Picture (cartoon, rainbow, N blue to C red):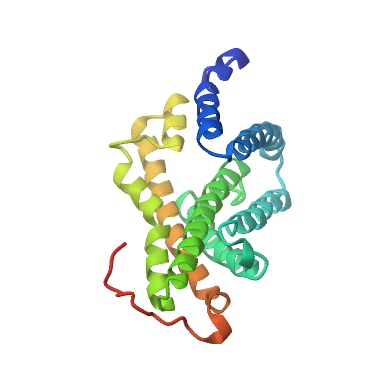
Length: 248
Protein backbone atom coordinates (compact mmCIF):
# COMPACT_ATOMS: atom_id res chain seq x y z
CA UNK A 1 0.00 0.00 0.00
CA UNK A 2 1.07 3.58 -0.62
CA UNK A 3 2.54 5.42 2.36
CA UNK A 4 0.70 8.72 2.83
CA UNK A 5 3.05 11.68 3.38
CA UNK A 6 2.22 13.96 6.32
CA UNK A 7 1.63 16.91 3.98
CA UNK A 8 -0.87 14.91 1.94
CA UNK A 9 -2.52 13.62 5.11
CA UNK A 10 -3.13 17.18 6.28
CA UNK A 11 -5.40 17.70 3.24
CA UNK A 12 -7.84 15.26 4.82
CA UNK A 13 -8.28 17.74 7.68
CA UNK A 14 -9.88 20.37 5.43
CA UNK A 15 -13.46 19.01 5.87
CA UNK A 16 -12.79 18.76 9.60
CA UNK A 17 -11.82 22.43 9.80
CA UNK A 18 -14.95 23.39 7.87
CA UNK A 19 -17.10 21.35 10.26
CA UNK A 20 -15.47 23.01 13.30
CA UNK A 21 -16.13 26.44 11.78
CA UNK A 22 -19.80 25.55 11.25
CA UNK A 23 -20.00 24.32 14.85
CA UNK A 24 -18.49 27.62 16.01
CA UNK A 25 -21.01 29.65 14.02
CA UNK A 26 -24.11 27.57 14.74
CA UNK A 27 -23.62 26.27 18.27
CA UNK A 28 -21.51 26.41 21.40
CA UNK A 29 -20.21 22.86 21.00
CA UNK A 30 -17.20 23.61 18.81
CA UNK A 31 -14.76 23.06 21.69
CA UNK A 32 -16.04 19.52 22.07
CA UNK A 33 -15.44 18.96 18.35
CA UNK A 34 -11.88 20.26 18.60
CA UNK A 35 -11.27 18.09 21.66
CA UNK A 36 -12.66 15.02 19.88
CA UNK A 37 -10.43 15.54 16.83
CA UNK A 38 -7.31 16.12 18.95
CA UNK A 39 -8.10 13.08 21.05
CA UNK A 40 -8.58 10.98 17.91
CA UNK A 41 -5.18 12.05 16.57
CA UNK A 42 -3.42 11.28 19.83
CA UNK A 43 -5.15 7.95 20.31
CA UNK A 44 -4.45 6.72 16.78
CA UNK A 45 -0.80 7.74 16.93
CA UNK A 46 -0.40 5.92 20.23
CA UNK A 47 -2.28 2.82 19.13
CA UNK A 48 -0.23 2.67 15.93
CA UNK A 49 2.96 2.18 17.93
CA UNK A 50 1.22 0.01 20.51
CA UNK A 51 -0.24 -2.38 17.94
CA UNK A 52 3.16 -2.82 16.32
CA UNK A 53 4.38 -4.11 19.68
CA UNK A 54 1.32 -6.32 20.25
CA UNK A 55 1.47 -7.89 16.79
CA UNK A 56 5.08 -8.92 17.40
CA UNK A 57 4.29 -10.48 20.77
CA UNK A 58 3.24 -14.08 21.27
CA UNK A 59 1.54 -13.73 24.63
CA UNK A 60 -2.09 -14.63 25.25
CA UNK A 61 -2.01 -12.54 28.44
CA UNK A 62 -1.06 -9.39 26.54
CA UNK A 63 -3.78 -9.93 23.94
CA UNK A 64 -6.41 -10.66 26.59
CA UNK A 65 -5.22 -7.64 28.55
CA UNK A 66 -5.75 -5.39 25.54
CA UNK A 67 -9.19 -6.90 24.86
CA UNK A 68 -10.13 -6.45 28.53
CA UNK A 69 -9.08 -2.81 28.40
CA UNK A 70 -11.27 -2.30 25.33
CA UNK A 71 -14.15 -3.98 27.15
CA UNK A 72 -13.92 -1.83 30.29
CA UNK A 73 -13.52 1.43 28.39
CA UNK A 74 -16.32 0.70 25.91
CA UNK A 75 -18.70 -0.14 28.77
CA UNK A 76 -17.98 3.24 30.38
CA UNK A 77 -18.27 5.23 27.15
CA UNK A 78 -21.51 3.45 26.19
CA UNK A 79 -23.31 5.04 29.16
CA UNK A 80 -22.47 8.65 28.36
CA UNK A 81 -26.08 9.16 27.20
CA UNK A 82 -27.36 8.43 30.72
CA UNK A 83 -24.81 10.19 32.98
CA UNK A 84 -27.13 10.13 36.00
CA UNK A 85 -27.18 6.31 35.98
CA UNK A 86 -23.67 5.73 34.64
CA UNK A 87 -22.11 4.34 37.81
CA UNK A 88 -25.22 2.39 38.79
CA UNK A 89 -25.51 0.38 35.58
CA UNK A 90 -21.84 0.12 34.59
CA UNK A 91 -21.64 -3.55 35.57
CA UNK A 92 -24.79 -4.28 33.56
CA UNK A 93 -23.25 -2.68 30.47
CA UNK A 94 -19.98 -4.50 31.11
CA UNK A 95 -21.72 -7.86 31.47
CA UNK A 96 -23.76 -7.28 28.32
CA UNK A 97 -20.65 -6.46 26.30
CA UNK A 98 -18.86 -9.48 27.72
CA UNK A 99 -21.70 -11.85 26.82
CA UNK A 100 -22.42 -10.43 23.38
CA UNK A 101 -18.89 -9.53 22.36
CA UNK A 102 -17.13 -12.44 24.05
CA UNK A 103 -19.36 -15.05 22.45
CA UNK A 104 -18.91 -13.47 19.02
CA UNK A 105 -15.12 -13.34 19.36
CA UNK A 106 -15.01 -16.98 20.44
CA UNK A 107 -17.25 -18.03 17.55
CA UNK A 108 -15.24 -16.12 14.94
CA UNK A 109 -11.73 -16.95 16.19
CA UNK A 110 -12.37 -20.63 16.92
CA UNK A 111 -15.15 -21.56 14.52
CA UNK A 112 -14.88 -19.36 11.44
CA UNK A 113 -11.22 -18.36 11.17
CA UNK A 114 -9.84 -21.22 13.31
CA UNK A 115 -6.91 -19.07 14.37
CA UNK A 116 -3.67 -20.73 15.40
CA UNK A 117 -3.06 -19.68 18.08
CA UNK A 118 -6.60 -18.63 18.95
CA UNK A 119 -5.34 -15.27 20.25
CA UNK A 120 -3.43 -14.35 17.07
CA UNK A 121 -3.19 -10.59 17.74
CA UNK A 122 -3.34 -9.54 14.09
CA UNK A 123 -6.87 -10.92 13.94
CA UNK A 124 -8.11 -11.01 17.52
CA UNK A 125 -7.39 -7.40 18.51
CA UNK A 126 -8.98 -5.72 15.44
CA UNK A 127 -12.01 -8.02 15.71
CA UNK A 128 -12.38 -7.18 19.39
CA UNK A 129 -12.27 -3.48 18.51
CA UNK A 130 -15.03 -3.87 15.93
CA UNK A 131 -17.22 -5.92 18.25
CA UNK A 132 -16.94 -3.69 21.30
CA UNK A 133 -17.18 -0.42 19.36
CA UNK A 134 -20.42 -1.36 17.61
CA UNK A 135 -21.94 -2.91 20.74
CA UNK A 136 -20.98 0.21 22.69
CA UNK A 137 -22.90 2.39 20.26
CA UNK A 138 -25.93 0.14 20.52
CA UNK A 139 -25.98 0.38 24.31
CA UNK A 140 -25.71 4.17 24.07
CA UNK A 141 -28.64 4.39 21.68
CA UNK A 142 -30.71 1.91 23.69
CA UNK A 143 -30.11 3.67 27.01
CA UNK A 144 -30.94 7.07 25.55
CA UNK A 145 -34.14 5.88 23.85
CA UNK A 146 -35.18 3.85 26.90
CA UNK A 147 -34.85 6.88 29.18
CA UNK A 148 -36.78 9.05 26.75
CA UNK A 149 -39.67 6.63 26.38
CA UNK A 150 -39.96 6.09 30.12
CA UNK A 151 -40.02 9.82 30.73
CA UNK A 152 -42.94 10.04 28.31
CA UNK A 153 -44.90 7.66 30.56
CA UNK A 154 -44.66 4.39 28.64
CA UNK A 155 -44.47 0.94 30.20
CA UNK A 156 -41.05 -0.68 30.42
CA UNK A 157 -41.91 -3.27 27.77
CA UNK A 158 -43.00 -0.52 25.39
CA UNK A 159 -39.85 1.52 26.06
CA UNK A 160 -37.63 -1.56 25.83
CA UNK A 161 -39.04 -2.60 22.45
CA UNK A 162 -38.55 0.85 20.94
CA UNK A 163 -35.09 1.18 22.47
CA UNK A 164 -34.05 -2.18 21.02
CA UNK A 165 -35.27 -1.26 17.56
CA UNK A 166 -33.60 2.17 17.69
CA UNK A 167 -30.30 0.66 18.82
CA UNK A 168 -30.23 -1.66 15.80
CA UNK A 169 -30.93 1.06 13.23
CA UNK A 170 -27.24 1.77 12.42
CA UNK A 171 -26.39 -1.94 12.09
CA UNK A 172 -29.49 -2.58 9.99
CA UNK A 173 -28.67 0.36 7.73
CA UNK A 174 -25.20 -1.09 7.21
CA UNK A 175 -26.73 -4.37 6.03
CA UNK A 176 -28.93 -2.55 3.53
CA UNK A 177 -26.19 -0.21 2.29
CA UNK A 178 -23.17 -2.52 2.10
CA UNK A 179 -22.11 -3.09 -1.49
CA UNK A 180 -24.64 -0.57 -2.81
CA UNK A 181 -23.87 2.68 -1.01
CA UNK A 182 -20.61 1.86 0.71
CA UNK A 183 -17.72 -0.56 0.58
CA UNK A 184 -16.87 -1.13 4.27
CA UNK A 185 -13.50 -0.22 5.71
CA UNK A 186 -12.18 -3.74 6.22
CA UNK A 187 -13.06 -4.80 2.68
CA UNK A 188 -11.59 -1.58 1.27
CA UNK A 189 -8.36 -2.11 3.20
CA UNK A 190 -7.99 -5.67 1.97
CA UNK A 191 -8.64 -4.69 -1.64
CA UNK A 192 -6.11 -1.84 -1.41
CA UNK A 193 -3.55 -4.27 -0.01
CA UNK A 194 -3.99 -6.58 -3.01
CA UNK A 195 -6.45 -9.20 -1.72
CA UNK A 196 -8.97 -10.55 -4.22
CA UNK A 197 -12.34 -8.75 -3.94
CA UNK A 198 -14.08 -12.15 -3.71
CA UNK A 199 -11.99 -13.13 -0.69
CA UNK A 200 -12.46 -9.67 0.82
CA UNK A 201 -16.22 -10.07 0.37
CA UNK A 202 -16.21 -13.28 2.43
CA UNK A 203 -14.39 -11.55 5.26
CA UNK A 204 -16.82 -8.67 5.10
CA UNK A 205 -19.81 -11.04 5.27
CA UNK A 206 -18.28 -12.52 8.40
CA UNK A 207 -17.82 -9.04 9.89
CA UNK A 208 -21.36 -7.90 9.05
CA UNK A 209 -22.90 -11.01 10.59
CA UNK A 210 -20.71 -10.60 13.65
CA UNK A 211 -21.61 -6.94 14.11
CA UNK A 212 -25.34 -7.34 13.60
CA UNK A 213 -25.63 -10.40 15.81
CA UNK A 214 -23.45 -8.96 18.54
CA UNK A 215 -25.38 -5.69 18.49
CA UNK A 216 -28.67 -7.51 19.00
CA UNK A 217 -27.45 -9.84 21.74
CA UNK A 218 -25.59 -7.12 23.64
CA UNK A 219 -28.51 -4.70 23.49
CA UNK A 220 -31.02 -7.33 24.58
CA UNK A 221 -28.83 -8.29 27.54
CA UNK A 222 -28.38 -4.68 28.57
CA UNK A 223 -32.09 -3.88 28.40
CA UNK A 224 -32.79 -6.95 30.53
CA UNK A 225 -30.01 -6.45 33.08
CA UNK A 226 -30.57 -2.69 33.53
CA UNK A 227 -34.34 -2.84 34.02
CA UNK A 228 -34.30 -2.44 37.82
CA UNK A 229 -32.29 0.79 37.48
CA UNK A 230 -34.73 2.36 35.03
CA UNK A 231 -37.85 1.49 37.01
CA UNK A 232 -38.80 3.60 40.02
CA UNK A 233 -39.02 1.75 43.33
CA UNK A 234 -39.33 -1.60 41.59
CA UNK A 235 -42.58 -0.66 39.83
CA UNK A 236 -43.06 0.18 36.19
CA UNK A 237 -43.98 3.57 34.89
CA UNK A 238 -47.58 4.05 33.94
CA UNK A 239 -48.23 3.99 30.25
CA UNK A 240 -50.42 7.09 30.38
CA UNK A 241 -51.80 8.33 27.11
CA UNK A 242 -49.24 6.62 24.88
CA UNK A 243 -50.57 4.03 22.50
CA UNK A 244 -48.08 1.16 22.17
CA UNK A 245 -49.00 0.81 18.51
CA UNK A 246 -47.71 4.29 17.79
CA UNK A 247 -44.56 4.32 15.67
CA UNK A 248 -42.29 7.26 16.27
